[in-house]
Image 1 (cartoon, rainbow, N blue to C red):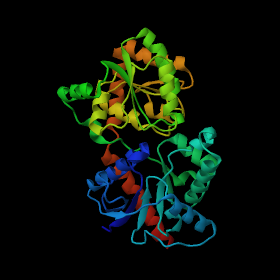
Image 2: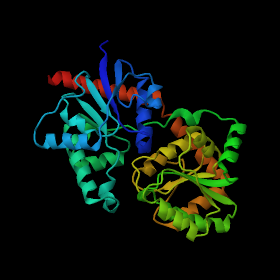
Image 3: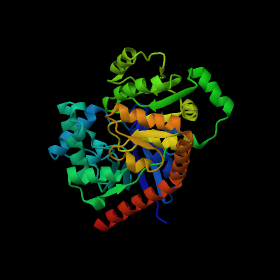
Image 4: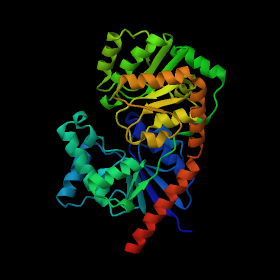
Length: 379
């Protein structure tokens, strides 16, 4: 059997949030694909990548390099092909170096948030994204996305033929399926100073993550459930100061814990201890924390927007993220009817059990084989 040389552009880092977790899920699944020799293009010092055992070629794409690649493409100036030794390429996030390769490639377009919430982006950011997605999508052999909703967006806004768009949700990291002892979980509770009962929201403080509406809803919830806490994790992005001010203004400082960055083991323990995951985001193509909660058996209440209903199915409750009252009602339903909440969590676990690295690896294998065969036929 001919082995296909596959280059994977692993340029996302831990600071990229969900995109980084998505990259790791893709790389993990490729260990189960056959007939493929994988080489990573990324940071050779990244311990998560090192653990996978694939060879790593040092590769960075800082802004200056991206700008040069885009300008050269617009001026029809060819740059050197950094991936000349590969047969096919996969990019879990866009790379402008792809504009200067002759190799067939698939890249993941995660969402088109800038078209829905332009106020969250500067004029330059919107123009930048438009240029990138237009140029890279035109060159891609396939575009990967994680929901039918995003597929429809790509077809609608970038006029990409539907057959070139592949819907392929990535399973979350398997760490949440590993059982922690009760002693380990309780040790984490004490060390992190977690309340006995709490809601959990892991998200960087970007505006679209909608922390302010959650705080508003939580203020009303604690009037009925005074012993309930709220645990937040995530980097202190542009909305952090405003969120902290809102917590203080609502008199919730003693009820809300912000942990910042936490280790994967601690995240697992937090899910185990949480009364529910609450995901009030205003925009998600797919939510990795929802999948993590599914694995951990944690009840889920989430925004009923865009692709989230497609992801959640009958495994959780949906609410209107623009309504504090709707968020409050969903939270109270979980608290007041724990039997129903656990029944939904059990269905969610069955749902996520079918999403394995092995099955995802088989999908990636088929995608790579298809691109390689089409490239050979075209030559």
